[in-house]
Amino acid sequence: MKEHDLTVLTRDLSEQHLLAGDVGTIVHAYPQGGSWEVEFMAADGRTIAVLTLTAADIRPQHADEILHVRSLALA
Picture 1 (cartoon, rainbow, N blue to C red):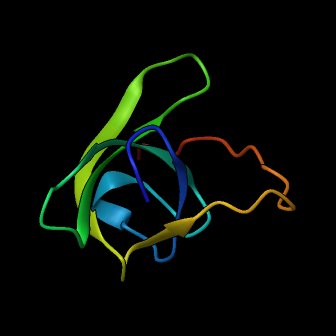
Picture 2 (tube, rainbow, N blue to C red):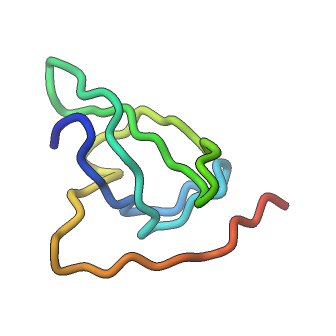
């Protein structure tokens, strides 16, 4: 995975209000490989979280997948 690729979260990250299946954008790929900075955004462009994640946390988004919208619960 490389910078600007869409990626899919593979597990819930409740502290950040993120759920498995949420889509983020890789904003930095570490040169040694195996970890990425991923930004998750709301529909209005607000950044929800920027996290350092590994291949255990994310996977590439596939062209045959459909995106889904959900309300962001910050409670």
